[in-house]
Length: 296
Image (tube, rainbow, N blue to C red; front, side, top):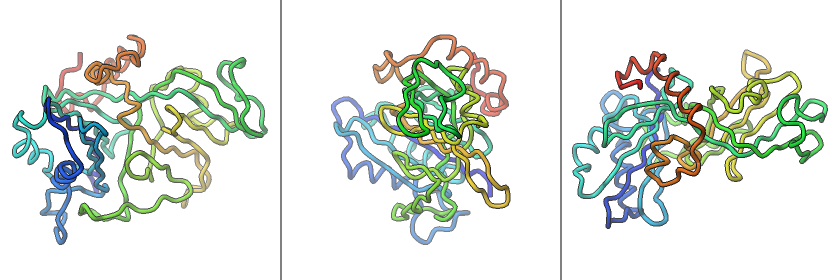
């Protein structure tokens, strides 16, 4: 199997319009398979559950699907995106051959770049209950026998894989995602069954903890009360005990500067140095050359 990609779209209604539940469901159906389709012929979701939701005020609809094999986005752009009903189309994209999501705005220039996500609290469980071996010592607070927490302005780049190997390659609107197991992570869309280590973690002192410090048995990053990243030791089949990651990032903790400007949330922007390093990393990456988009 290849091209198991997870796509997250946010479609904004044109000024003066609202997207209701029925319209969002119809949009999501554009990206799903029909009952009886074979994956080689369908234009729908590939190995990823279809999920949609609507903003309370109807300003936008969010859609998740697997875009590795289908042509749903192209059909949407051809059949629905005429400028009268929708005003903007943002996308986040996870490629199963990479470790980091990309973000783009399809209705403007489709220029892709790394996604950066934020968190405002870290919780660490240590082997013997001692204070975590890194970080600001005066700010850790103990919240359990072996668990410590610290409020922080943090961020990372991460890959948000929502593939579901039990759901099959030709996913319909009615296909329910598999129930999460004890090690899987609930997300705002469908469970995260597979994860990878965040990269370019800020602040830097957190990196050895996220990477699996010998004195750490579990770690969580939170954003406004919900878990956006979790790392813990797991007994994996054939490989023994490993330090495993799960990601639950979404539009709410996305700190891309262009998206924050579009949504008028610039107060959440990080320092220029963080975004500069992201741009430099993108310019030097194979993915920037693969997609052929500007790197400056």
